[in-house]
Length: 557
View 1 (tube, rainbow, N blue to C red):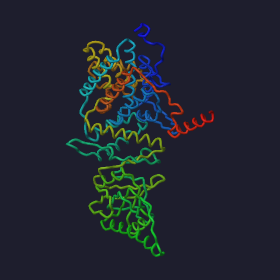
View 2 (view 1 turned 90 degrees about the vertical axis):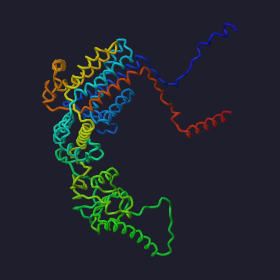
View 3 (view 1 turned 30 degrees about the horizontal axis):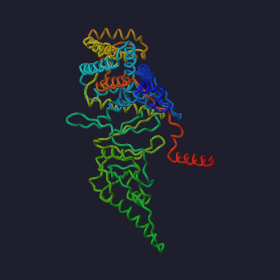
View 4 (view 1 turned 120 degrees about the horizontal axis):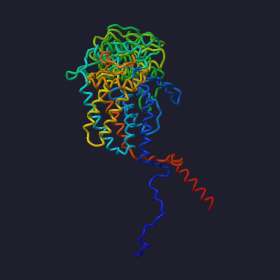
């Protein structure tokens, strides 16, 4: 074989990726991702704490949301960058898991990435930074568990933690009032499982109605339905109610297939219609015979059935949501009836009062005076839709906090006290690490101190002085020394009764570190090019184009 034959051919382009694809590698890829995540963290940073600022978010349709809740801000923002989306997914997971701490998690993740970037620029490999962060996070969680105190599972003990959580919301001025409502609802819906309190938030219904003020928000020991009684002749108030809850219609349903009825005389039409009425009448008479004086159904109620129900003095409500039907059955002790003919007296639920009331401009049905309802309602009032939405978000956060304490009855000091103490302990731990991982662990401690720094800034304090004072106090063994944001000073947080659930803080560290590690490990971004117009068209469009090509070829020939 000749030398020329064995030499490789050069100058032949090889297309691996699709035309229009973009690839960013190495340092540039990391810098792009970290920058995107830092922007998201910076947006949320000013919303942290009781003195945090609110954001006004306007969507493509012009709808406005005003909130300081981290999860809501991220949900309403229309973010495009994939790294920023990763951070938002982490925040959503934090919100779904513990219902609080989303802002802290994102801000901490952003700071971990920023400090991690400085280590990468100094020549450290991403793997070393990741390992250092992992070890520091594991130690931080252990330190948090050591610092934590047992929570009092009394109404007063839990209320202190709920009030602390509501302090950073738009509705902070009404936090004590709302905290009382949250506690009442949570302790009523709570049940005991394996000797421990358990709270399922599905059994607490939050119903909103515009009008009056936040202080008119009320806790109802029962269920409130945003419906009205179906017939004007029916009673609007029933005492000692026996409630039939139906998952079946009180109407003659049309068959699924097309049917035809041949009639030869008008009497036959009348007999057919009378038969329908008789069926509906038998349904109503059966419900009355088992003692039902209130009927609530998920399906429809025929006008003829409404007439018979009204004649029997039975109150009826139709088209109630499935979730409300389940809550109502749990609250009243009823069984959901799927076949009216098979209904029995023991299937009925009981309530002291079922009443239609006017709330604002609309009518609502209240089912209350139940001896021990296992599902309850919070009826939220407020001057505008935006206030209603914010109160609902605050109540949800408060309920999540109660659930977190029931799941793990331990609390830690707030006001940045926990973060400063953990940072101090992580620094001591970092000195025992060998190699360059020590540098990453020290940066982790610096990132934790960013949280009290923001709290100090939002309180109008000098952050450098505040952090120096906190470090000094914690070195002297004052574990609960933190920032009194409302007073604008460094003080004993325990004396102010500012406590957070341990579960929330542990999840914050886990979420933030997972997000930071995920983004630091990316060293290559491969983005596909936008599809061409021809590719966007469907198969039919493609076939039409082929036909056009064939025609044009023929005409050319």
